[in-house]
Amino acid sequence: GCIYFAPESAGHVLCISAGGDVELLEPEIPGSGMYAAGGVLSPNGCIYFAPYSASRVLCIDAGGNVELLEPELPGDNAKYTVGGVLSPNGCIYFAPFHAERVLCINA
Image (cartoon, rainbow, N blue to C red; front, side, top):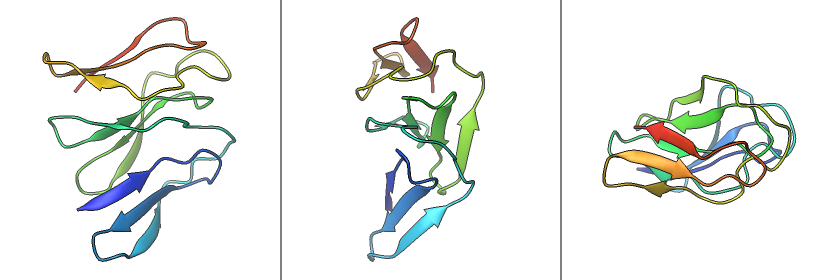
């Protein structure tokens, strides 16, 4: 298993393996203040991060593959500022800060 850190301003997801190996994962995610809060592990094995100033949700699957999910979310900064919660229905919810609505990910 690995520990994953979403980029705030670093440009790549940081992966640290159980053995202590450190790796920056592709793709590059340019920008500043992209993801500010911790991710949520879903039952499907993916970790989801809500965007702070990024435009899309960040998803890291169990194999360490990084994907930016559609659709693009409106707004500039501070859309979601705290971690989400996994609901008994399997959805992940992130409370808005400056976003227009609650973010629900049907994982």
